[in-house]
Length: 82
Image (cartoon, rainbow, N blue to C red; front, side, top):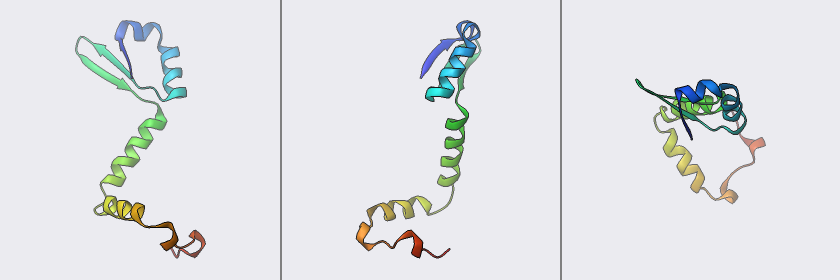
């Protein structure tokens, strides 16, 4: 994570945002009133998806159970009924 004060952020905003977008490098901006974090849209969307998936009761346990399932016990994806 890049840490920067608001003055330097304003000076280099274009380059910092391009770096955040290209490399998914968050920016922690400090001000006299507190801090703010800038994320790429991709990172933000991934975070929201993770929070959504985490909110579904039992899904985490099902995923962990599936990860432990031996591949030879699994069926081909073409055989999965929706």
